[in-house]
Each structure stands twice: as structure tokens, then as C-alpha cells.
Image (cartoon, rainbow, N blue to C red; front, side):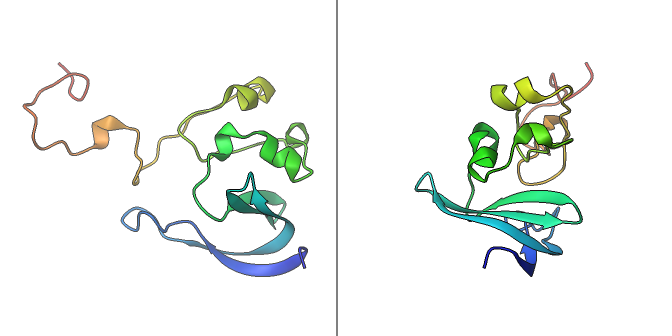
Length: 129
């Protein structure tokens, strides 16, 4: 059934250099099969934190209707965290504040941390020149 307590390993599958899967135990609140004919979706809850998990990579940040399709109102949440490189217009319009956090890993967007080896240094914007 949907409302089962389950243990899962979440994330850390693409980049094992900077991360590893999180071992979580929580409540499987809702299940939606074949959302947009692309992915299966689970609303998983751990200690009052709801997590939307998809069966494969999916642009959740671009699809703010996903929460509504799970019968959740995004405006009822105090905080929404998106694992994405940007904030869509729809989520931005709901937010009083937004923050962008850079993190090491496979898709690191902090270009100053990428170990470029085949370019002449110094070079802007990587170096202070």
C-alpha cells in the first residue's frame, strides 16, 4: 500500500567521489505511476520532511505542478528545496526568498573548482587577474 514505512537508499548513485546514498527510513505517503508517461513518483516523508522521489532523472524544478498532482499545495510548505541548477519562474513567484547553494560533485557549477589542466593560466574568470 502507499502508506508504508520503508527503508531506502537515496541518491549518491551518479557521483561516488563526493557523495554516497543516504540511508533513510520513512513513510511512503503517496505513489503516482507513469507521471507524464515518463516517471514513477513517490512522496516520501522523513521526520516531517516530505521528499519527492522519481524513478529516473526528471526535471522536477521545471514542473511545479508535480506537487499539485500529488495532491500537495506548494504554498502550504514553509520551505521547498529543489535539487536543480536554477529556480523556475513558477517556484520563484511563490518564494519570498530564494537561495542558490553550490556543492561539490558531478554537476558542480562553481567553475573555479574545476581542475582545468589544458589551458594557459592565469585566465579570467578562474583566476584573480
